[in-house]
Image 1 (cartoon, rainbow, N blue to C red):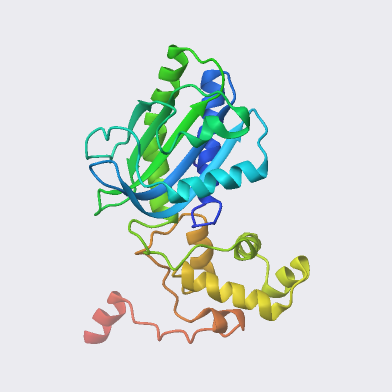
Image 2 (image 1 turned 180 degrees about the vertical axis):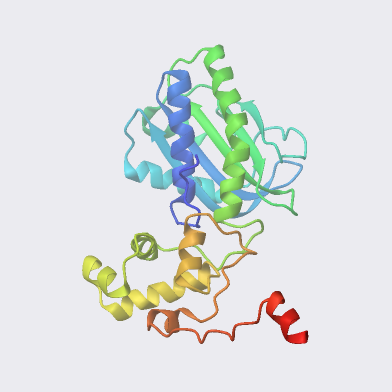
Amino acid sequence: MCGLPAVATLDWCDRAAQAFAELAKSEGNTSAAATVVLCTLAADGSLSDTESTGVAVSGMQMRETALSELRCRLDRAHELGATVPGVNFDAGVVTRATVNTALASPLPNLDGMQGAPALIGIVSVSTSDASRVMIVSVVPVGTVSSESLDSIATSMRALLPVLARRAMVAIGTSRGQRGGWISPREQMVLEQLILGKSVRQIADDLGRSPHTVHDHVKALHKKLNASSRGELVARALGYLSECSGIRHSKPDSEIEAGTAATPAAAKPMIGQQARRVA
């Protein structure tokens, strides 16, 4: 879970779903499928303003067309299909649901899967809007004991707050807070920047023109609200929050050009000042 990107990549929710599918496989000793939905959840269980969805399986194969179909169903889901256990999801809650729930029902119906009762976890992904949540649905495939389901649920409860923290760092604490989702090409450029490569080196490695790579870098600066190369990399690694930044005496263009800052005049030490007065 701690390996989730610190920036809003298009596959962020897919990666999160993969982590929970792997968890269910490990705890339940069985194949599993998982979905992740970032949306607004009302007290009556209705869903709206879906921002992103993710789908993953572990210990089994599923056709890409089936996964795409499931993503479409998640995007169109308008209700949770289960009783909302309270209204405070800061610490995360996990509830069992039947396979007929709106978010879980597509999972066992794809490719002939026979699923156990779904586990649905809900955690708040906002510091100001309690209705903005991330909903995780996990369906172990095959025969799973009640003890295994309890074990999976316990692990989910422990991981949901971690998921929320990672999501708020990468995606933001409110809808539309970040500059936008990072495209796959921008993600590739960002990974190369983290390695310390120059624009020209990245262009050579990716087979793109330096001008195109420079455009990607400018887009990354805007989306991550970074004013320098160091700040961009720090945000990508999760070392800087949205409100913090790195102070620079000169912009990157001057630093990279080798322009040295004019040293300030040295101030006399206190002892020297005292001797002058004397």
